[in-house]
Length: 399
Image 1 (tube, rainbow, N blue to C red):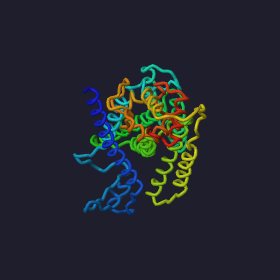
Image 2: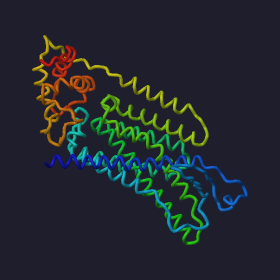
Image 3: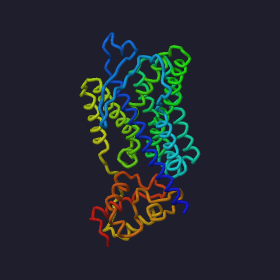
Image 4: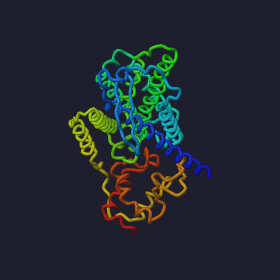
């Protein structure tokens, strides 16, 4: 009964995380598009005299809209101002809660891979938490340093540091956990940008206006810079959110490099759209993104690890015995492995029919990527992997 409610909580957290993430990313994409599409008013026009830096006309949902952006601030503020912050906060809160429920509370299964590093639960969780906090502190310090005035160089250094983070985590945690922790670190940077920089800067500007003072343009510039950074972070984070479904990436010997190639492709493609919003069709950027994605596809092409030779024909009973000992503790209707409350990916292997039905999946996960069992917690041997491979090669007979 308890495991059922844990599953319900995980499901609802995941759903809420997706909902809030869509709201946050959607507003990020919209406002970057808006900023890049605004047109300056005619010199001497009423809008120019009011301090409007740009405006546009749009039609949507049967109505006409005329958003305007001021160079600094209007002469007076309305009583009702709409703030865009809760989408960011709730996305981070739900994502962190999901991280705790799915990974931190099951660290020995979901985070620790003895073939990578032998860690205690607290060590694995501590590494994950430290990566999130440390990433924000280093990134924020860089942005506040003189380097923060050189956007291109700053972006390059941040990418290199995130690559170093991915490399470090991949040498301490299992591949899936390393990917998720990189995503959690980037997500923390994004949410902290909103909480510590963008919203406080906007509040300072509003307070100055209501006190009859001219707002400091620097607050707006800082907020804009962090908003643009968040915009470029979005596609890499979205890939990380779905990466756990694709063992070919996180199980690769150079999984950290695969992750950063995917991130670079996302940034390049995002830059194309940001440029396009300004009327510039810079096709080299999606071309770079496509080349990087092709590189990932080529580099992750499976190369089978040599396995011991299996003498004689393999029987289904042999395979069933291996699966029963190494896999069924997790892949059964009621898993008995500590920390697992439901069969991973919904795959059941507790009956002969289920084993035969998932033969190709077994081959991919047990023989090709070797990602299963996770961290080899059930100690499957190379000979047993070879038996599974031989059974598949013989057509996966169910008798």
